Image (tube, rainbow, N blue to C red; front, side, top):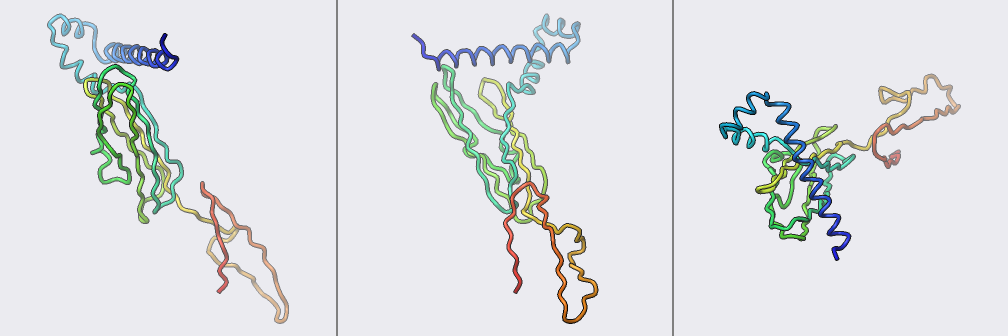
Length: 204
């Protein structure tokens, strides 16, 4: 008797196969005219087209979201991959597209026997002079003699920061104060960033 996990893996493989066939059929209907497609198929000249089409299709797109990351810090995400098929697979990331960026993937290539698992680490190492804002890169995962997948790595680079409500020039103006008297001004601190901000007042 097959276990629940085996049944689940078989269902997932069949769904992937069906989805991929539908994607190829839709792409051919979209990008190839019927008379051209029939002519190429009849003359067995469609192999080059199918190869190019195969290279552009992604069976699935995954998102590795680092969320809000403080500039100058390093964050890591661990992705787990498992070979649920019946044959050895070789897979590799086209990591050259993120070479020279804040992102890195290790290892970027591996082999998995049937049922074997492996962990892939995606690292975001920012610098103090890194630009603020959204950061996104797409990396292709190529399975030898199999489908292609796309991994979108996204993050938002930011820094902790507070501002004083109603104080745009950085000055607190007490205006005129009579000698011998005391004047109190209440300041309202605002955190308009996406991350918490720990602060302390240095009155030295």
